[in-house]
Image 1 (cartoon, rainbow, N blue to C red):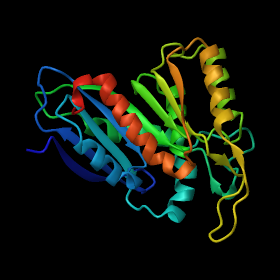
Image 2 (image 1 turned 30 degrees about the vertical axis):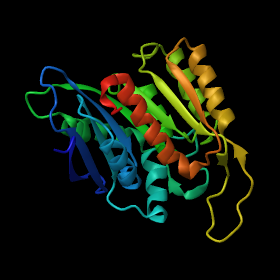
Image 3 (image 1 turned 120 degrees about the vertical axis):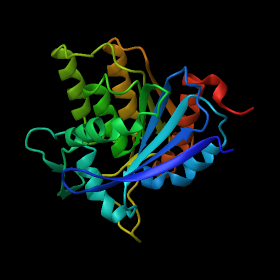
Length: 276
């Protein structure tokens, strides 16, 4: 009997954008224990990675979900992700720093979509009870995950931010962190554990890649993550870590970090859930 059963459904947001939600539920959960969930963003690129990783798990009271767009073509998704995953920009900056034709600032709308449309669908069938939900995002979705950590503390029990695009109007995310602290915002100091993942070969480049053209060298994104982590720790939040992935560039980091987060989540939430 399969250890997990997989289902999927299409969702449409207020703007008419189509998403695909996949859920891997344990086939034989323990009804007395709540079921915890790890939700992956950009699921349209993670199907094979998650299918393989989840197939290596034994039954446990955990489930996994992925939310992605209905299409997976990068040229189509680039402007969508630049809007959906980014917070409101600094004053006077309402477009993506790499392409002025791409509007930014849709993070609050996506957060509301997660809260009202996606999260209710993650509830397990009776008699199992809903547990906590962790969130994973990579690149722009990693930036969004950090925004959720700052602004939706009760919604997620743990945040995995892989290759977060902190260069996005840097130091804007630091400013948002400081503003939350200065305003004594609800949840500050009681946030969920935060895990940052960055590949040592990741580089930030001011312009998008041009097919067939040589890419500029770019600058390492590690210092951005180190600076953000230092600010988080200085705020008194000790449950924050930075994991460097040696030799990993930005693209491969999506799959490497997703596998790592899945294994970490299982080991943390249900230590007996990994097969020997």
